[in-house]
Length: 224
Image 1 (cartoon, rainbow, N blue to C red):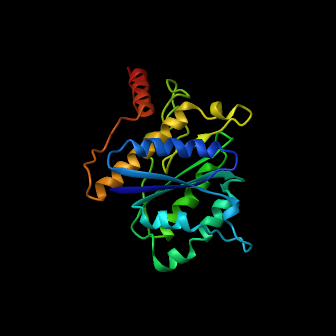
Image 2: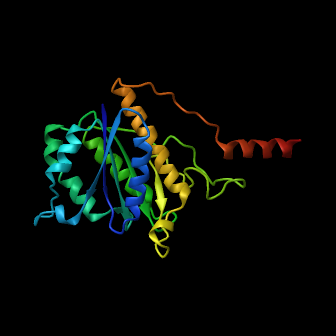
Image 3: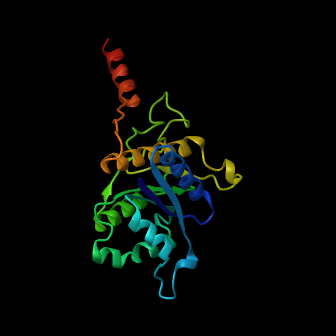
């Protein structure tokens, strides 16, 4: 049985919705056990270090770990940063080495410097000796025929991103396309990890980039 752990922080439950979408996607893959674990401020000690034995054990037992948090002030949220610093002892022992890793993030702004958060998650995974699984989908909504309904409409390559319109009710705050993008990533991540654990076949999905195809059509039209 392949084991996937999703470790995330969410202050206002918007990032939690993306975490749940990633969980739904990963759970579609047969013979994969997927668990959700939430980082909270209550797990941080008086020295600002994170500790929660149950979550630490889940990570040790997992074959792949997906990290997620809000983007706040252009970087990972404070509780998640405490979690990262709390991984010092697994880092010393290389306890997470050669596990697969991925990441997701959410913010209210369309951009919000979310890529910086993804890079922080990527560097953290690299320091832990983990192997990163990228998004795998072309960017959406980047040509005249694109729309807000496109997969990966925010154009992230490292992992799924979402935008939360925070003055809407929680269940309406994140576009369905962003949640679908999270589901697609979760399914891709779980399928790849299961494959490399020797427990199932994985066929790489390849699709043409619609924006490039549209640009080439425009060039041919102009030429002729």
